[in-house]
Image (cartoon, rainbow, N blue to C red):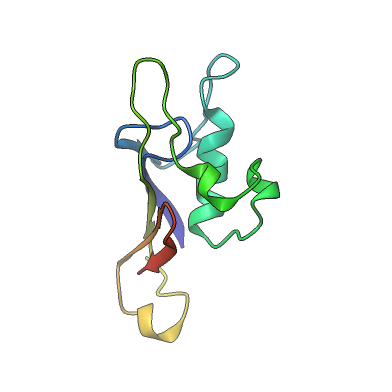
Length: 117
């Protein structure tokens, strides 16, 4: 299975819906300090099931929700989805016949998080 696309919405520093396409070859994330590079990597870990708020650099899991800035209001939800190509028909048996699998995790303030496949 190969990652093809990551979509973030309200996750940490990504207040607005943001898409990252992962093309064939080498994909790199570059930018100045504080621009959110590590948040992209953390979003992958989170959507794949990370349960430790400490490893997500927070005191609670709700800390992954965009907390607002002087120019943008805070959000009540954070959502990350990852599109995975399944060319070799791998993974759990119920997904082996699918060409693509979309995994999504959503967290709402005071309601916890849910997974969707």
